[in-house]
Amino acid sequence: MYAQESKSDDTFTVVLDAGHGGKDSGNRGNQYYEKHIALNVTLKIGAILKKNSDINIIYTRKSDVFIPLNKRADIANTSKADLFVSIHCDAHNSNAYGAGTFVLGLHENDRNFRIAQKENSVIFLEEDYEKNYDGFDPNNPESVISLVLMQETYLDQSIQAANTIQQSFVRNLKRKNRTVKQAGFLVLRNTYMPSVLVELGFLTNKIEGAYLNSKKGQTEMSQAIAKAIVAYKNQLQFDLQEDVIFEDNSVKSAEESTTSGYVFRVQISASKTAVEPKSFNFKGLSPIKRVKTGSLYKYFLGNASSYEQAKNLQKRAIEKGYNGSFVVAFEGEEIVPLNKALKRN
Ligand SMILES: [Zn+2]
Image (cartoon, rainbow, N blue to C red; front, side, top):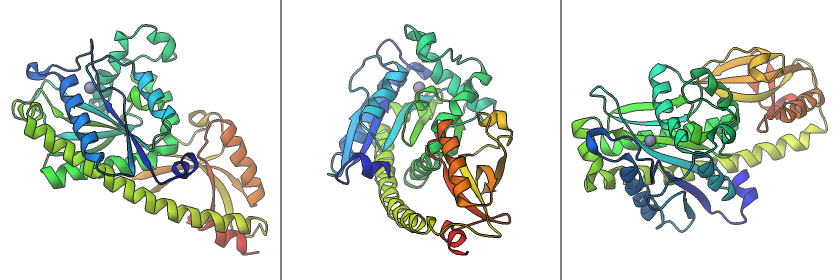
């Protein structure tokens, strides 16, 4: 939807964000430089994607310079990008190896928190970081929860993009699958588009570190990521067509309105980890209902007997910052097409 609103043609804009740079080397596992590997891979991804005339590529950096995290999000937002991909390498004091792809969310475990903590701590190299990040403290796990609500509108699509990248690593390169995870990465907080962070692998692992530092490794990893970005773009364009059809129908029948036997609720967010459906977790909104569908928990506001009431609830949700919220019809515990609920009168 936003992709079509913001551009007249079908150009897909991707922001490629090479992690770290300049005075921030990133991790130095086995004496390698995360910042150099991230930049090499990022530039290679861009070079491959450039062959697609309908893909527009924006870089947050193209050389060895320091860029604050919030500046990276600004670049992405200004360019009205359709996807933000941040490239990093991991480090650990074990022999851990494998590629992982992350989306913004609650840390599912301590391990994910540590990865985000490491990447977030680069703000200590920035002047005014206290001011620029509203007192965010990378070392406090609690400090990250407020990050989660910002990206939730794009969570489904971020997970879809992350899955596509992760599958590409596993299928094309036989990399160990560390699966898609959620964690509180600050660089993903302020982007208004689907956003993922890729940890290419562990520089601290002897074999994987050497691979990622090699030309062969960097070429292969960038090919896998570029392939995935193209695949995601194609999926997205297909989804958008479906979306448009669905919305047209629902608008038409909205006039006819209400019902019996159906309840209307407003879907305000979704997450991969279960958040308690308490009003304090949802900016004071209540009642909140949580429904698990597939691997996602979805959160619904209200319990309205008419579509009009639900629209008012949606307005309230949007006022609270849930910009992506939309009305959903329930028949009992089942979600049913909105058209069906609106027509039956
Ligand atoms: Zn990093």
